[in-house]
Length: 276
Ligand code: ASP
Image (cartoon, rainbow, N blue to C red):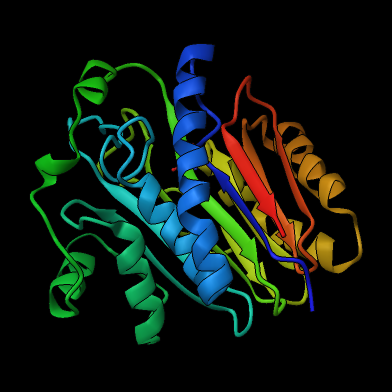
């Protein structure tokens, strides 16, 4: 039906060329991890595999290597959505779930709720066989050094498969020195991510409060639905982010037909794509 495509990003907040290069290499590895899943099992499996991979890359702000909040603790957000039935699952402010994107998927599959946070999300993980861990597992020397350095980032992936199914997954530590309990756009359907087989899938990265106020991922999918071109939608979303709320960040997107696009208004955004 369509052309299979996978797009992966590792955040739009790299502070310099050297770190950008390291992030780009990690993103390239995630693309390689997700692609076989796209061919074998479809869009949803591909985005989950790519994001799960990036949760284990210490250079990226998700899972291991996530940034610290103002208390020196790590609180993780993640989300997933598939565009066939608009099913979604998400977690906010979890501290002890080894792969937050796995928990988001379990919540989506369970189907009763879309978003669980903090202790209730951890409890759901334990009760549904999703791996938990000691929070110290996520701490890295690099993030301890960066404790007070401003940094925002997220990892995410969007995909369309040959059957025309679309999906998006996202995972993040949010940003450095955020207040405890702060939940960003990444686990909020429509703000940080959205997928609809009628149009495509979108994933954002950047200062989450701006994405939340504009409900930007959903807006971009609606524009795709109205027939705007992929690159025009990506660039338009980021221009709108700057114009309306003086926001910084980036987006990746894929259309149901497998066209890919990305845009950012930060100096760097590590991203990679592959199409059939
Ligand atoms: N959007 C994420 C948040 O605000 C951070 C990022 O993508 O850079 O939590």
